[in-house]
Length: 276
Image (cartoon, rainbow, N blue to C red; front, side):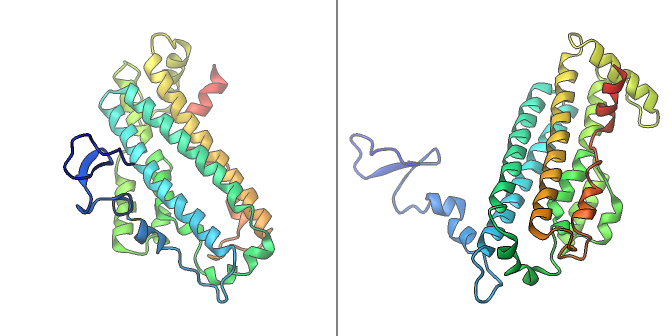
């Protein structure tokens, strides 16, 4: 983060975050990243403090930070597709997939907590639940899995509810991809699945002619697959921690989560495999 003092400098200059400044001007690693504020956000509810509650909070706060970045990158993918820039869209999709691998690996961190350790503070979490993660639902909505019924149960603030309503109204990644294919003479009408599947087959059978759309479609499918893997890994983690108990938010726990395994962002990209 710091470069050595430059020769001939009358005062000690340092280079921080790509900017040259002198000591005392205010910008530093901690102030730029708001480290003091960030580290003040982990507040345990257990009394006496349960050893693993800090781990639980840190992992889930990290998830929310990554969800924020995912939303930013997925919006960028969508906008680049509408802008006819498949190379940038593929680049951002690769970043999305890398982040999703990190999300998957974080499950192993929380699995270092035994069921007995979790039970020391689990009762303090009620009625909070991971089901209430607004950003998680935003990722689903933006990716194409819109469920208006969630609005009746999600959003603790007007700002969160407004965000969810906006996600329901705005174009999805699938909408952008369909629009992108149309520019290649591959019609993707919203009201005719047969025509859409025919266009997808045409693309898949001539990957030289439709290289750009094909590689983007593979990137979208990997995003879909990665999220499915995360869902499954999350279910196993929940079952390892609480077995078949109900969730803290009143859900049916792992039995509800298992009903989500068949969810697909882009079902027609999966279906076309059977038609090749």
